[in-house]
Length: 92
Ligand SMILES: [Zn+2]
Ligand SMILES: [Zn+2]
Image (cartoon, rainbow, N blue to C red; front, side):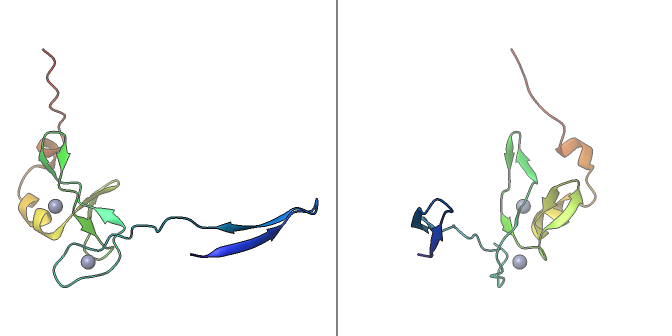
């Protein structure tokens, strides 16, 4: 656990310890263990996205802040993207 000593101008001093480990997600692509900075935004069903963790190499940007995993990039090519992201909210 990294602890950082500090001293304030008023004579107060102490130590700040960084608590809790940051969960580092790894890229979900087989054979790739790079840290993930992205998640697949492909909509698998209304209101649900794939959410696979992807590194910068495997996250394929398809729009503004929209990324697909390699599998869904392949699946979506040929399909109309507009349909996938159309909101399907039904209020009865
Ligand atoms: Zn990767
Ligand atoms: Zn995906």
